[in-house]
Image (cartoon, rainbow, N blue to C red):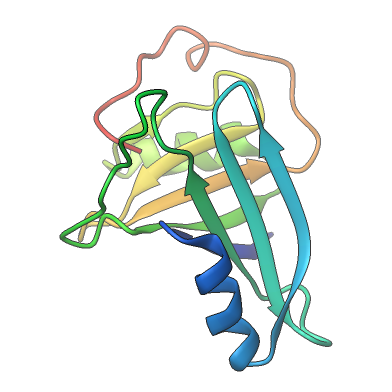
Length: 143
């Protein structure tokens, strides 16, 4: 079974983006900040539809104060789906000719792309033990 999780977009001004989504009736449901990786994830959803989240990803400015500007659709991040078995799902996709951009080396997360280049994040609810061939498979391109 596959379950829709969220759609991710990159933002340069989290407060302004939150205000925009609040005008649409979405409310913040949760937030995660990583000091080490220098990013903040903010999840919003319509009241009563908490399963229909949008993830705002704010990548902090570099140490020198410069910030990345997202152009050409780079502000759209990915769709995310929970799968029953990430290894079986990735193997089925690989057997069908789909490139696994970020293999599920950790038994938890993988990234693939649609034929149009849209990034899809696959998540295993409870991490599986790392297993070959995924552990030694390198990343392929952007994810």
